Image 1: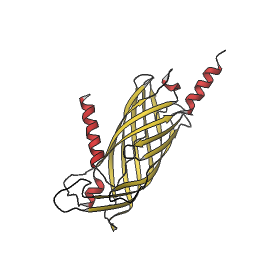
Image 2: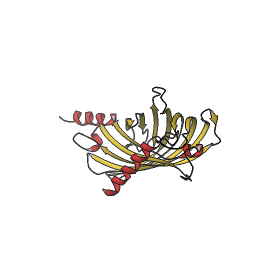
Image 3: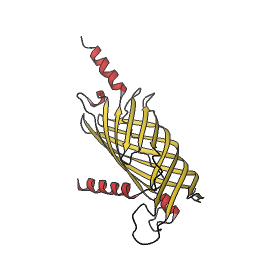
Image 4: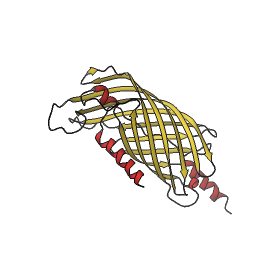
Length: 262
């Protein structure tokens, strides 16, 4: 429990203390275990960003997924962080017994994001204040592995790990193009899920989810000053999300079970 609290604290600190232009998306880790299963998910990040995703298994062990995430523009304040992105992926999943689920995906996506803030997004009482106004378009390739444990019919939890290669098609700060062309990110995520209702877990159509994730650049060194633009683009980020998933196939199973009752 102590380690979990330390992890939550570290993730929250990253989230609140960071305002980089790169916008990580949460790992997928769909709770799909058989062919013809569908998972529809809506999530919200604590900074107001929202995300919608759909996953489907056309044949056993094959998974396809698409996701869209957006943080609305809002007003033109002196400090903001906004953007949108999408991703598509394909992969596999393997139930191990009745409790364990392992899987992996690979995919690509595109994004546009903007960030405006002074210095490192923190209040500085003395010294020169550096204005950053980042504008970025980028493509990304990613690979992800995940695992979950169905601890009971109601509760499951697990972890996912994603590596994302970011390729900037345009990147500027205060209108000045930057030389940074790419970076590779390490993105672990931990999740806790609840399926309310009665009966077996696989017959419950609704799932609630809490996630905590981080994103750091491979080779990143926290040695540059806040005015260094490469440092600003590559610095760590964290996120916390709350989500709800709907499984249409569970309703179909319930209907079939009730239809067989004489």
